[in-house]
Length: 227
Ligand code: ADP
Ligand code: 5GP
Image (tube, rainbow, N blue to C red; front, side, top):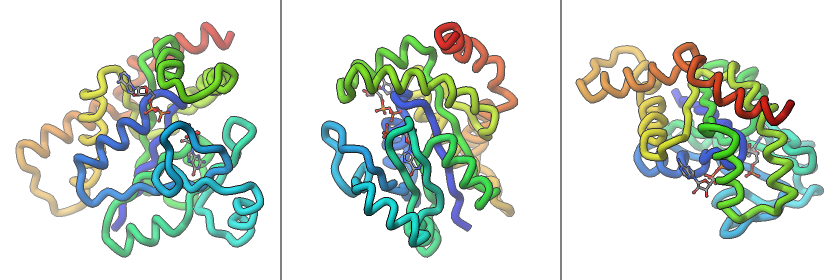
């Protein structure tokens, strides 16, 4: 059975960096390349980060039922997950990562209740702003819009199974890898090795119930600014 991992985070939290790292480290993990109406950024390539399509093409795909979920993100662009990637991952007996926003995550949970959801948080608002600016790929206006949206997105963290704080990249990548692998180990009839037990313990620490105290000051750092 294909495991679907939903990964959400406010823009600039380091989600793409972490997902790329985990794809490199974990075999049998496919990545769903979304369709979007936004313009490519910097070094992004069509078919690698996204399929960049016109509004007309996007609307035609919606009409034909080609999306598993789709949403308008930041109030000006559409993003959608094609059904094709889930079909192909299932045929290959691979698992699948979806990098989607909180609205998309809701739609997927309704259709695939066994999907595993992971929310990635920056250590605080200041760091998020710094990373967005330092990435140097968005205008000041776009960055401000993304920061304003961040608080609303973060407020949904309680709907996710696991919470990761991307402070030190190496640790966050290890935790994401642990969550992905430990979910595979939950499949019945598995005898765990010592290394697998270690990963399961690391993943368990990232479960929502065990992260509430860690999340509170992060949320406050956004709330103080959001007012
Ligand atoms: P997202 O996909 O969430 O929008 P990116 O992966 O593009 O975010 O990361 C945003 C910026 O922050 C990039 O310049 C990236 O290199 C940097 N970054 C990511 N994780 C860390 C980290 N743990 N520490 C410092 N910088 C990071
Ligand atoms: P960005 O423009 O920074 O690449 O992504 C903006 C937001 O859109 C991110 O939160 C990302 O997770 C989300 N996103 C990317 N692809 C999809 C998708 O197919 N569906 C939905 N609902 N959100 C997506």
